[in-house]
Length: 565
Image (cartoon, rainbow, N blue to C red; front, side, top):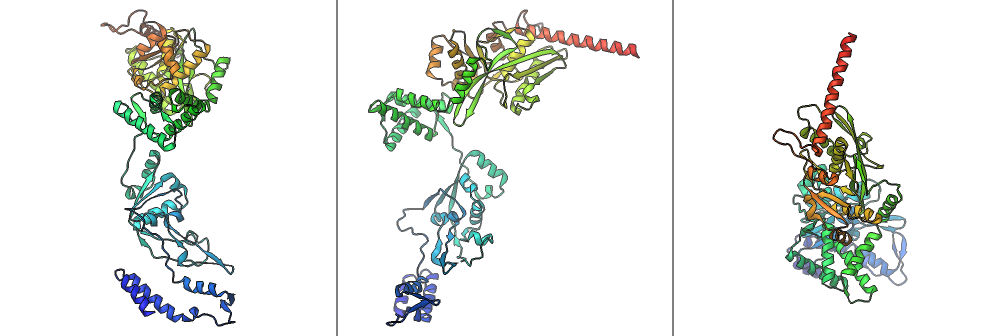
């Protein structure tokens, strides 16, 4: 043994643990030399009293001297970069396997298996945060390894005292790795707030944009990206009309005409489906019509509920007026989100007023169907009324506002301008044109603020009007700040170009109420009065009447009380 062992000791002399191990191997072989003796002819080889073949006996004797190579980087170039798709506790920290022999579970060092941390040691480990948190004990195991700077491979069952099988305790391995957690923003913020160790162990955050600027240079880069995806996926070449339609749809996904979406999974899915439709017509290239057909079919597969709601409107089950004029009633616009598919749908908003104590009642909030943001929008209406009208008198009105035929929760303030229009109409006793629909939030100064989902809201009302027949009077009032977000369907654009449908952009409530009623809103003159016949003058006159009636009522009640005394 001496010559062979000495040769190995010399080769690995720079690693102190290896010569020491080789010396132990040499001593163990000499002490157990009988295990390596070949059996004499006719002699039965046994192990624990059980007969064994000669080859198996030799294999068993030599097994203890094998080298268990956990990780081999001979073929690697540079630091390892490992992505772990299933970050369970064992897959991260390694595991100790067992074999069944003679009815019991046994193990040895050759059954120690490496985990992702072993493979990534000295490099980078990429893990999806949500998958990691879904695995029992994996998150705590990873934190313990990073905090201690070493990998301890332990049997999870042994650690939790679930099994009593004798296992191994391998020496800890020094750990030097950079872990990259990938996940949603919300998950990052939750971990940062709820886990005190998270901010200490994961100190660098990279928050990636979901959109990019849309300009000539960016469109060229996007076209190159489309070509790269097509080549990688083996798709047909996209001509300029196809590329242009994909870029337009990308802006639609971004919800901004000046932005492009960089959610490449959705774009890649669109390219594949457009390629399919090009193949159905036996074309060698994909054009804009193929892309549009792919977009239409994607929508068709998801719009069952949208069609059902539109059907109920046409049948008169859901009451939506698109003609005539009504006092205290306006068409508001809301957005439904179903997975990745969203669509707009009009809702009837009504308001009623009477003498009261200056309170605007949100019926949705009273029955706990309105969310806090929606309730905030309604409360702003009281601030608007108090700040603009009858400054020298108490606000003596009681108003109620409701979304008619709403049987689910209402959230968001995008209908607050529509609610204010209905309230002003009810106070001024001036009818509102039902051929128009309204979206936009409002502040206490009467400024109309931008909202989300403007494209879906416009298209939702357009579809209802188109089904009933466009008359040239139908249209939608939107905040002026939302003009940059418009990326409408081609048929809506054609309706606007031909004058059959209109989109009005307003900056203030006064501009919107003039469009809805056809009357001037009116501004205060030097004497502090609104012009006769204007909307604001009618509202203030009505509120003044309420205030005077309230004063007279209080004085009359006081006189009755004095007489009784």
